[in-house]
Image (cartoon, rainbow, N blue to C red; front, side, top):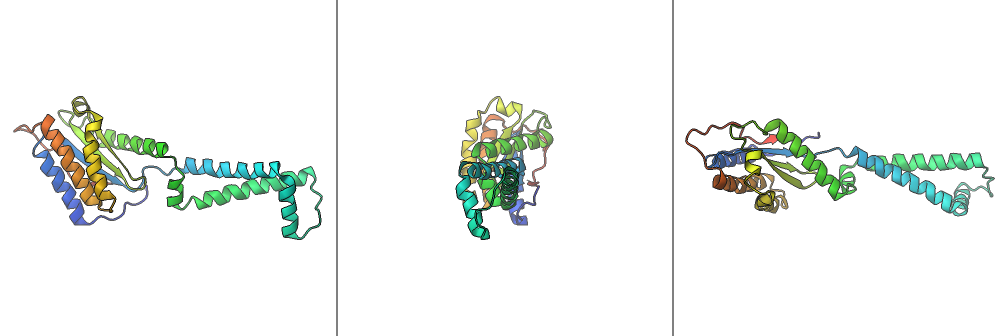
Length: 227
């Protein structure tokens, strides 16, 4: 994946301290992950390139006189004899040129992301968050009280994924306050402040449902993970 935009050491330290402070009041273990983008979306770019190519060929098939006349005017020819073989070659050329042009345009990430449907973005970000959670937090705590705050900057989306002990007591919609607190800062590109706000909200919920025991140990890293 592409490199995450640089965060200052002060911002990283603030996130780590917020996690530590939240875990002092609960048995929950909070993991924070920041990534620039959750998927390459090359398959979506391929779809749009193919769609544009087929549309161009379709337009040529629907209005051949217009497009063939246009080609004659551009090339300065006088009513070129368009036999079937020549027409097929023209259609193939148009399709290939349109496909390659659209693909190259989508190498510019903002355009590629703009063309990705919102449900696809949501599904890909969620899938990556769950994968990261399975690797880094799921069932890695004694009471299965790990929880992941995952932020994907490219898609402007965040996910909170909780281990089974937490999920059994806390409904997913409860994390809405943490999401809202984070997004309020992200609108102004205050990434560190947004993550700290989310950690504080999540920590408050965990403290309510999973109070810290005297013998509780820190089982997962407090530092912000950047992937």
